[in-house]
Image (cartoon, rainbow, N blue to C red; front, side, top):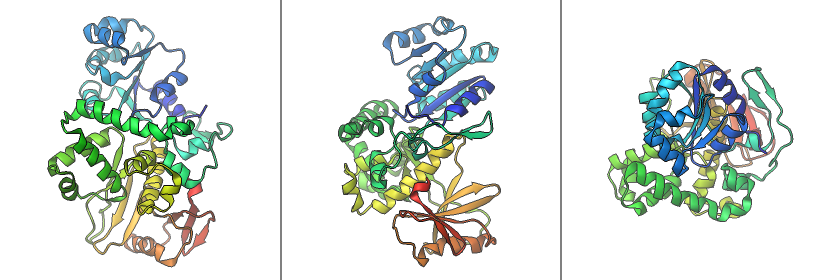
Length: 396
């Protein structure tokens, strides 16, 4: 069994809050996590037609079955139930663990009915820390605890990227050849049609593939709209659904405190490289190694790993990138106290001096040449050079 690093955070939030909503993309393991963490709570899945019908027709009687609270799974299937839950949660006598796939409809209902009443946590796909058996932070004890032996440590880099982090293809590699195809079809045919009312699913599939090919690049909505054959407004709406669904992430640019002209468009990233690879036709690690987009895919992998680890701490990640009008760039800026720590990401195994250009420029503009800076690359060695910490991808 793989210990999910969100487990101690989930326990702590449930103890402190009135109730908890556990969201995330489909198939990240929300149900398994909730049931394993709270095995004594009654469980009801609103995916079950009988339970769903009962909850829709008589929500008060449905919830009366659980005088000591419960795990209510797939809450997005009956979003109207949240209104009834509001009064019960306000009474403070019962607590619930609600799980639901991230989508705009669910988040809108939560903000309308249960704002301020729920602790909101997001379960991302599996991280390399989880798969390598690295220590997990317990906020209740303020320390890291070692979970035991590594379940899947030591995988080659290209295998890590192609497999991604969804539990099914990672733990059962034989499913890799068909799992992502089924996942995409389910998402397009079910979730997207329900939320967006998309009639031309082929256009949306083309949109998904084109987004995948642009992962790690500046978002150009006009170009994307032109290539798909839809309006820029539709691109924005579809992207918002992919964001809410936990499939893509728009990394914002950092442009505070500098009088220099900087890029203000976000960068587009997929949050799982396994899904990304499948969308652009990569099915095996040997295909990825020589693919023209391998550098951007590696950058996507690093950004997604950092974001997932922050989500597993119960935090909304504060991440940025920076680029000026001359194309000088820092791939990622991480919050450390009041400072933004620059991180450069390069796949190559050889570290050359020109890789420090963006880091040096950032230090100059920040006015703090002692600021920690890091270069994360595809090699194995780790050392210091020109005031920069060189870290291997294995440090993820």
